Length: 458
Image 1 (tube, rainbow, N blue to C red):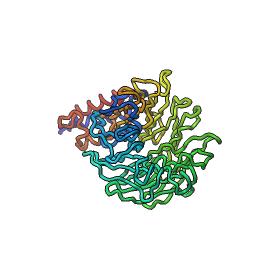
Image 2 (image 1 turned 45 degrees about the horizontal axis):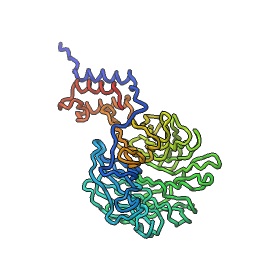
Image 3 (image 1 turned 180 degrees about the vertical axis):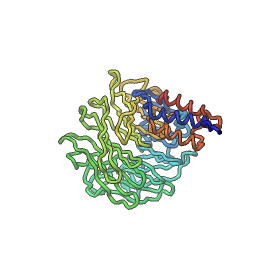
Image 4 (image 1 turned 90 degrees about the vertical axis):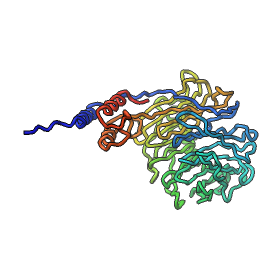
């Protein structure tokens, strides 16, 4: 009689499966520091580099809207390798003028980046334009100018990109009343205007277009001074990007007389919309908060507050969403009795659970880290406009790499799901499971995974 011996690899897989059931996720660091900072190679005092940031596809674009390359507050933007901090390109429009504020908003996806210049002379003084560049070459692809733009519209105050569509906020447009605001959609490659969007109930001073996001055929637009809940409480709207039809209007339920500025910042990804209320007072005057909604119908999912929120933090000054991770900037957070240093928080978007808080190693008063944040593919970028390392308020951006080999689903938590995905990849002979890099799938890969898993991730 032959006795069949168990396959050694299968034995180790069985052990790993038992490990998955028996052991819980290792505790991750809750408060961490940056990996490094990036600066403009030609930084000058007062540039406010870091006023806007966007991360995608291994790159980070950073705006410096009050730099002086084309005159007073003309603005500029820079593209970096987010993993190394290497500056790749500096971007300045050929027809830039004083007070254009080029770089007030930035967005990037794959090979395209959009740079807003809200006072560029596209349709007259203060009308605004958006410039589209190739990320590989730094070459200008096209310039976006609305068909019906007018002086002082501030077109380009907010921008976003998804699947070749550029969404632009024009918060001082007057279609529904003085400074009521509007939004536009453009083809990123041709510069053709697809449609203009205005809310069904827009009115004077709403500033619809103060924040904007586009994802998977839906456009979310903030109107930070809308009066839906009460005077200047703010609201946000969801639209079908294909038809322009308004899907829903969403807003917070603040105490009467509290100007929460709901809609000050917006992010959207994978069916979730994040809308901030920078002046919310749940934890003290101007603490701030972030609401998460369902993108399909505007239904409220949860409200997020910082675990250590204090008066005047302005938590929610900026927000970013990617792969179920919510990043929130808190630009006036205090550290160790140092005022207005700023910080950035990460949360699980679906559960609202806290992941990590990023604080700078070189805290100084009025640094304002978190005025702008962007999170994508495990990298966080947080702008600090008053960093004076390269000159008074020259600015910087702090970079944190959250990537970890054991985090197979990229949710910044090590748990059974990562073990399950590793097992699946290992059995399929997927290169991602070859953690030793020797081309073989064996005990040594499993051992390496267990070692990394037990060590935890940053």
